[in-house]
Length: 111
Length: 117
Image: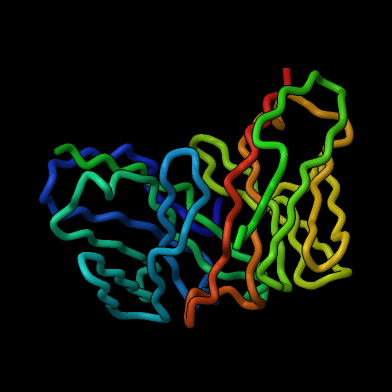
């Protein structure tokens, strides 16, 4: 079992929709949680991070962590075609010396 | 700044051939990584180097070797390529403890598409 799991999708939504992307994790030691965005044929880039439980908002994006259920979410408001990408959740592990990624969810926003 | 540069971008190998993927970063990062990305499997860590002179196995190290040549360079070698090693390979680098806070994140290269026939 992977330490970080997420539904691979693909997820297809109309422009302007609210998108919910979700991950679960198994390692209770995880404290930091990150979301990376990967455009086609490119390397992933950090979108945002959260620490421990709670919400964090950055523009149209909100990251949420529920440590009691080991559940991580990313919400995208007013989704745009430019949001079409693969979204990967991740957490530092191994004494924070490496990063474990989920499988990624492919999102397509239809104009 | 170039960031993380990896070569070659595309490569076709025959089963049993060997090759080395080269990676260099110009951000003075201590940590470097090699990941592979496959459909349905996500990014899986092959090897990482937390500092110059050290290397450690990741999730899928079998069939690979690495060399941290210096602080800038981290190469990945396939000694005897197999079709199961057909994948997209990403080199990455970061400061220590890439938690995402204070901009401390992993920076990825553009990827190397490898096909083993």
